[in-house]
Image (cartoon, rainbow, N blue to C red; front, side, top):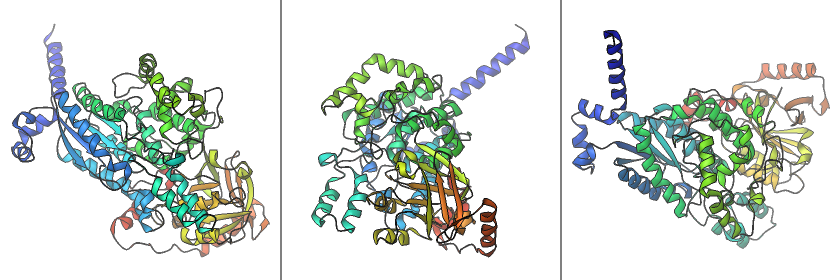
Length: 592
């Protein structure tokens, strides 16, 4: 061997040794204060030399999805210790969209995602760790953690916090909006409303339907960042505790093999995720979160990618709000692995996962392990078969996924509709515009029957730059629960919807009104044409009369010349900062 070759081999070996050396040990040599400060935090002298794992969670008393996480954190910590490491607990609690509904608190929801991601980045970057376990459950906490993983890129694994039990008669929280609307219309008694409120959330865990929280738990597993079969386990089950402990042990394996999130999460992994999203009829809020997560991993995912991949995607899942059963039944039917088995022919099976094995290898091992038999034993107690919850690939509810992206002169950059929850009567319709500049005015008009069949309720100035992009949950529920309006009007907004929303709702209209998008120019009586199969959303008439496209464009140009951007709603604080820096909803609503 010549000297140059020997030197090159020696250099490569040194670089490998340096890369595999515990990151925490390098920084301990630089900072003499680190060890005494950790000893003062309760670490033992022996702990200092162990691989050090950050256990980041959204645990807190903020809502049921986070209230049960501390117990999982302790299981993770035990698993880390069993594998020879030391776990340090860090916390950044999330807020609850449900508790923020109906008042200006919901405006903080989307900004909280970016704030949590920023805080996790600070935690992990300010102090060195060799690996991380990230424990979260719900709407903004989970996407925030996934965004942060892409930024910090240390060996990491995600533990999802599971789903709450259903209440009496399988009551679940997403039914509360409709129940409340029925009470407001005088259709049920106060006692009936109180019974529903007192029994809809009988345990900790994410809300028991395929809303945003459940969709984000599925997202973590579908991307390969959580252990197979771990998403949406019942939060009260021993299975979830075992998963948390196993994840703690696996974090040490990931550290030893230097397998990092960016080695796992590729464009192909995101394409797998979108196919799973189509199969489960996932939340429309995924169109905000998944592009934002992808950006942190250096992958560009657009709304049009969703539309392209959902065309031909087999929609299989019979879980609320689009389906019949609470979300705990998803696990009983086999969870994410069962969905992936059914759509196996449409997936990239060679993508890597946190097990150190490919997706295809994971699915084969689960099938051989008796996993599905264990799941289905739970389902049998309810007198159900797997096919009642997860349809076979060749017997789907539909073959066009669940999401459509609409374009046209009302939404030049795009708008989002979850067509699996839209009445067929509204797939193609021409409606009269009823524009409102805030949700409060719109819901009042719906509940007082000022809105009539054939109307298009337009709520604007509620996008990321307008108000922080709150959910239009109560308005969608008031419409969907009204037998007359539910199949005869549409709600169109530059805001967003709850993952629990159903009915004729089109959101994320971009450009938004605050940016001077066409939605700001719509006037009372304009005609709005919706064509979901054709993927179009257009202003097709003025003052009740249909017009040629050139005539509509001319009127809009006149209105645009007279339009003035409204003053910001906020004169300081987080919301002012977010509204100034947020990108379009159709791009992910993240801050630049």
